[in-house]
Image (cartoon, rainbow over all chains, first blue to last red; front, side):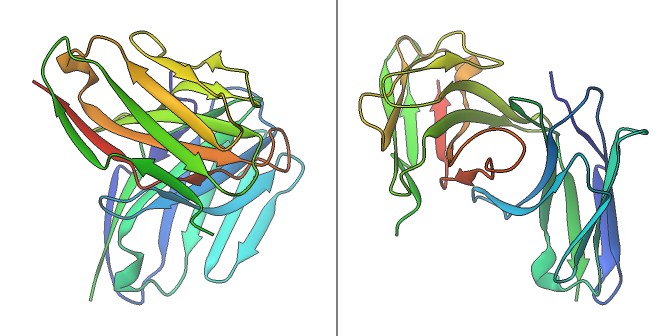
Length: 108
Length: 115
C-alpha cells in the first residue's frame, strides 16, 4: 500500500503564484523525498529532508516536515509554466513508498 | 554519463507471451529497483536488489521475476504476460539505502501493453 498521500490531487495556478502541495504518511520514516515527473518521463529527485530536519530549501523549493503530524509540504514559489508536472512524495523507512502524486498545472 | 537507461521504450504483448525488460546504470550504484506506475496509483515497487547477485520482493512481485547478474544491470521478466500487467515500468538506482544516500535516479520508463 502507498505510504505517502498527496493533497490536492490536482492544482491549477497562474504563473508567478505560489504552489503548495501536501503529503501525509502513516508510519515512522528515515527521510522523506519529493520527486517531479514531467509527462511521459521518469521521476526526477527534487529534495530530501531527514526525519530530524524541519525545513529545507533548494532554489524556489521549500520543504517542511512535521513528524508529530506525519506530514510534509512542498512549496514552489514564483511558479513558471515549466513547473507544470506531477509531484510525488516518497517516504523512506528501509524501503521507499510513493504517493499517487499532485498534478500541477501552471498557466502562462 | 547516461544515468539509468531502459530498453525497450514501448512493447505490445499478447496474453501469455514472455519478455524481459533491461535496465542499465553507469553510476556504480549498489541498489536497483523496478516499479510499475498505473493511473492514480503512484509508483509501486515490484522487486529490488541491494547488490550484484541479490534480489528481493517488493510490494507487488507476483507475475514478475528479476535477475542482477552484473552490478550495472537489472532485468525484469514477465514469464506469461497478463492484461493486468499493462503499465509503465520504471527502473531506478541509488547509491545506498537509509537516511542519507538513497536518492533514486530513474530511467525514462517502458510502456507495456498486454492485449
